[in-house]
Length: 210
Image 1 (tube, helix red, strand yellow):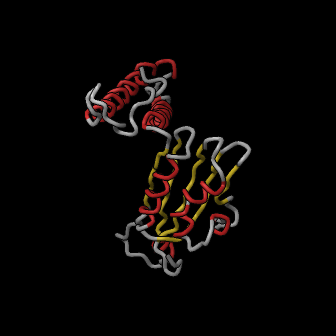
Image 2 (tube, rainbow, N blue to C red):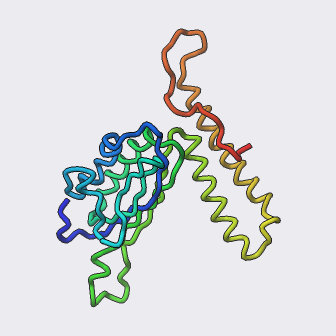
Image 3 (cartoon, one colour):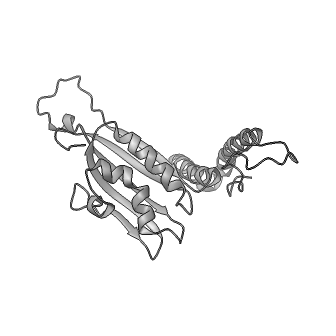
């Protein structure tokens, strides 16, 4: 969309480990929803951020990592582009990864004379990508444990928090088992000679979750 009068500055930030066989062409296609939204004709054309001090979108072919620190002017419809991008990145990711997206209310910042009761429309999203549900749940679990431990260490020694971490793992175990069971329901009965079942969901249980 045009950047003229765009109500938000949208910042996308995160590192996604990619499979070793992923090519630049595949990555360009996966990221097409966001660089096309920015009005670019290619990933190389759209990889630069609105702010020169930000690295933008980088593909480290040697380490097989996609790094994003990229800002684009836009509106709420950018969320649709993010959804499409994440679906495509799932097919390229080697591990689970988190992508932070912040919507800064540009109109609120530009208004010099705001009413006393005016509120900013700033928003924050945490998106997750990964090769399978277990990988995605793993990174979700790790981030939650980090947040909870950091919060509780203000009051307790870290060695006292093993029980809290264990309870978090139980919750993710329950979610993972429920997901596997729901996907099992969609599979044909054993021995029926049916084709493939529900695509994702098999895989291993996330590590730490036992």
